[in-house]
Amino acid sequence: MLATPATAALTSEIGREAAASIAVYALLDLLAILVPLDGVNIAVVCIDPEHAELVAGVLPAGIDVLLAPSGGQELPSLMQWALTTHFERGFDRVLALVGDVVDIPARTVATALGALESADVVIGPSQNGDLYLISLRSPAAVELLDDGEQSAAVLFERAKARGLTARRVEPRRRMADLAGIEAIREMVATDPAALPRLSSALRQIAPPAE
Image (tube, rainbow, N blue to C red; front, side, top):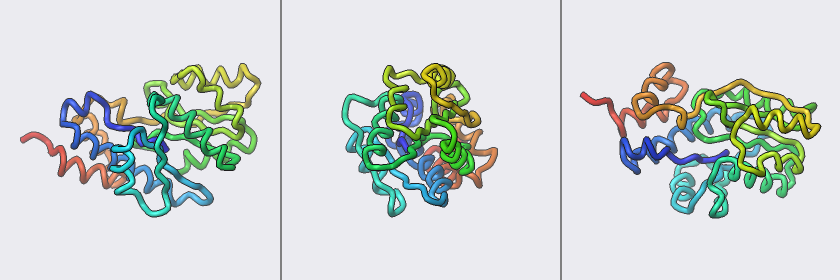
């Protein structure tokens, strides 16, 4: 999982510390959904030492924090590094997921991994069309991300053009796609029980204006 930092727009709106905290609480809600999955090893990839320290301080036991190399902080580069690292560790199925997906059920991740029984690659598009999830069963398929392409549709067609069997999972929302703190608050308000940590953080860190 990629611990995506808060967007520049959110940081500008509510401040660096508050925005970073909200991003971490969203990550924790996502982990709470994924941890119960059977047979899944979870690691969180961070983009800089400060970010890694912040995330490591709140993660449940048993989840590794990996620090990505400097210079590769665009989403496709991070996914590529995370996928390659886990194939090198001996895993035969690897899934990369952005950490600010806010409405993904565990079944979507289970489906993306299970589909690798017959598919070479499984792709998940965010609501704006960018990639939020990719799962692979071969290290060779990591090269799909070589040029930094973020469009899920382009990557899907690229996989098919290279003779790979490709599947899709349903679109999901990312916090990066939401226009500021009010949009995040409105999204959480539709089902606060599904995102308890983020809901609590919003009340404490960024309460609604009076």
